[in-house]
Amino acid sequence: MRACPLVAILAYDGLCAFEFGCAIEVFGLSRPEVGAYWYRCVVAGVEEGPLRAGPRLSVMPDGDLSLLEQADTIIVPGWRGVDTVVPTELVFALQRAHARGARLVSICSGVFVLAAAGLLDGRRATTHWHHTQHLARKYPNIRVQPDVLYTEDGSLLTSAGSAAGLDLCLHVVRQDFGARIANQVARRLVIPAHRDGGQAQFLPRPVPKRPGRRLGALFDVVRTRLDESWPVERMALEAGMSARGLHRHMREATGVTPLVWLLNERIALARDLLETTRSPIAEITRLSGFQSEAGFRKQFRRLSGVAPNEYRRRFDATG
Image (cartoon, rainbow, N blue to C red):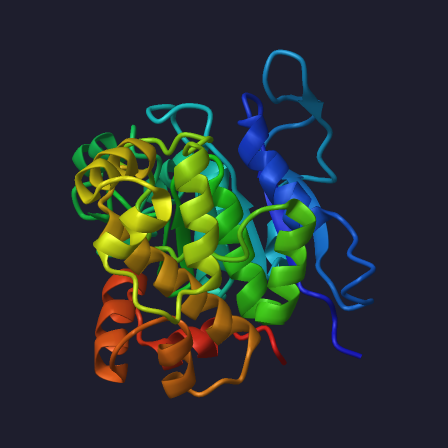
């Protein structure tokens, strides 16, 4: 019987509790719905415990850095300071792990630990948008990606801040166990089943929780009939307002024009169909309201970063 993958999560005094909690939530909890073959998880202490994780929390590690020697994946949560010196013994332990092929994953400012170990030179990496310029200045040999959720460059994976760590952890689960299991874990966490690493870290403006009664009714109707033609004039008529009024209200509610909102909804439906059905691309084109398969493929690649067939291969949850 094959051994379950071993994940080692680093802990240190001054630990970022949220990022650490994300890793524990994904890799450290049992998953009866998945079956017996799931991750083994240990917490490796950089120092002896208990270790402070915020003003009211402490963590007791399972052991010291020797736990990294057998780990398949090592998680580095947010580091205690972007200019705080990384202990030499931790640098050496990560270098040895990388040399033997372990997968190294940083969340938020944890990237500064991998950078200090010299592992990211010449590679793509990211961190919280607040730290990307500092990372680029301090480590000019790193190809910093300032506005993505996460990066993957060989066995080195880095994420942006906080919740983006969950996206990266789910990406790791998807690699190890497939899209169906990753989607199950996402449902348990009540988060989206996927957000591609290339997605922006933040929207240019927030989306209000309440779009208004008339827009809300319009959204409901359009989403159930995306296979139909929805010019602006028809949407305005459905919402009971002028085309000019629809543009104004839609921008206030979503930050985009009606046609951009419609395109995003069509692509969202197409993604769902690619994940959950075996429908051919031509049928998905029709159901999501595109006039031609070529136009659908072009828009899908532009907004999703990959072609529809590649997207299905990565995120298929039907198997």
